[in-house]
Image 1 (cartoon, rainbow, N blue to C red):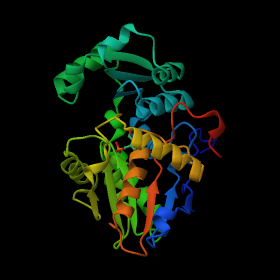
Image 2: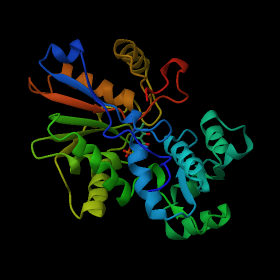
Image 3: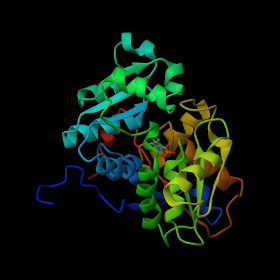
Length: 306
Ligand SMILES: Cc1ncc(COP(=O)(O)O)c(C=O)c1O
């Protein structure tokens, strides 16, 4: 390539071991896989998922979907700005159209993303071909390349496979927080025999096993790797929190100097500590927790170390 790549990533992402008595007392090792350091704006699994989709779009505009605080919308908008690609974000909630933009949507707009708000019932039906065509028409994005909500399609899942290959031989269990399950689907396929992936869903519902399997079938032709889900740590559902979770996240930040993203990463780490304390892992197990995101907005003192 003749010009420097504006998406140039830090890969493989760093892997740090941290000293944490809750693990050490049980003979366990805790490692942090710092995917949050891959790129300052295309953070964590966003880089791994979006870059293969941008390649597949072959220079076309991008259109994608998300809620009012979506990390994926912000990353797509940033990629559009960095690459000079037009982007449209279809946002859940028609009522938001008449309100001032929240900081996350304001960042999307500042990065040049055109925002198109749809009512919640239409948004729920967005994968139905007729509904999708109607949304794209109304958004003026008929010719754009469609990236699904959360960025999880076959290209994205194949992109996340590299997360697993980077960790071969370096941990026994690799744990990741799950929204759509795309990151877990790719990660598990990239690990070697003898390693296993553990997904911690942040949404309530128990539907993810089938979704992850379907994503793997589309990306790789079959269920791949060894993986399982533990549904006990969603703390009430997406974007829900509890005083215990918030106290845990603040304490983890202080102990380890890691800015803890609250929607996903906090629940993953909380789940891992609970599992360790419940003796769910055999002594000697090395556990890698994937840090898939950073808090937004970022605490001023915690700019990414690049
Ligand atoms: C910070 C963070 N971690 C984890 C995930 C979950 O990824 P997936 O949807 O592939 O399960 C997301 C999804 O948006 C995210 O923003």
